[in-house]
Image (cartoon, rainbow, N blue to C red; front, side, top):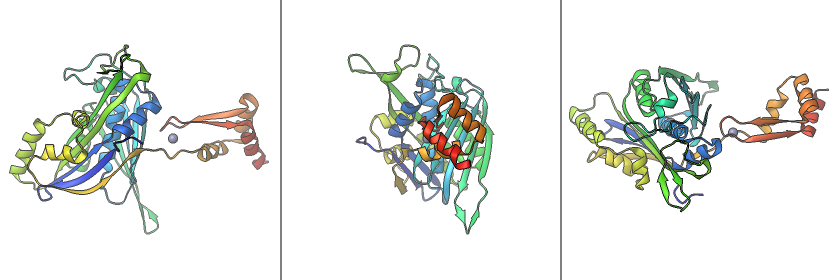
Length: 319
Ligand code: ZN
């Protein structure tokens, strides 16, 4: 356990005219990047998407889970992230080695260059309702920015008609030989094993319909000077402090706080179930040719080795 747990809060401000969420996600992003061995730019893209997905599901009533899928034309391929009602977050990218050696004009990771265009899909699974499974809600929008945060804002505006400001940030550092820490600029110079997720986090601030002009103006001015989310987290600000610095003197009422984590639902039992679902010939073939089977979970990169004895048992059950 790290000394600082990740935190997610949801809140209202300005007497309910603003709905807002913020999260510190350094640990869960670090765990995702460690598991998938993502290069710096892919780390930033995955970390932003994980944080955005967590924020999107924050405070949503009856939410079972939310899945965000960026189907990208750029070299990263797919970015798939998921968060459930209990703060379990998981995700992956198709190409963890997608990377751009130069930073963009803002001195940030050039996430847009690895994402490119494409489509963003959001699926919300609601809970069970009087014995009937509610239809999942699905929305999709074109990827308009590729910087992830702007894409979440565009999705909220176009698909859910909510005017939102979204900030998502990931700061990566490299432990150098003399144990000092340098901000990583991507590129071929870094060593993957010394890459660290130093800070990650984000916020979503939403204007409710009918918000006062004065509140809107105040918020716009304040957002214009708000530091990057990863900088705020790196300075040690909590999720609540991030919202306070964005909202300035508007009153803030925190409605809920939780501690999200990277967690996957896969297990050895599930891996065996998947093999059991394959055709008899296929299983017999695995046994004969490979003497076993290997399955890797996409979401967490966990490798499951199924032994020859276990395969034999699966075949035997059917005979
Ligand atoms: Zn898994």
